[in-house]
Image (cartoon, rainbow, N blue to C red):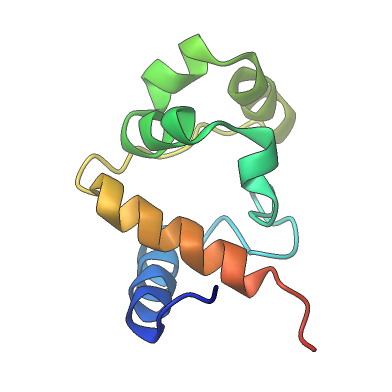
Length: 100
């Protein structure tokens, strides 16, 4: 099932406004590529990481390793709601699909 256009647009806008300075869907920038993130991080940890990164680093060895590997601390976005993050997740998943 595809992502609705409105969710895709909201997710894309949120990526552009909050994430694109450090992340791309398909390639490494200052931070890792976002494609496939759900295979690397449970969604509950993702919510915590986006909203309160310092707390998430203490709870996840994977995130602590990323912090060390990229030598940068992720910004926290406490104003992003779970619904906002879900839009971002769906955008990333849709944008990661191969074009037929």
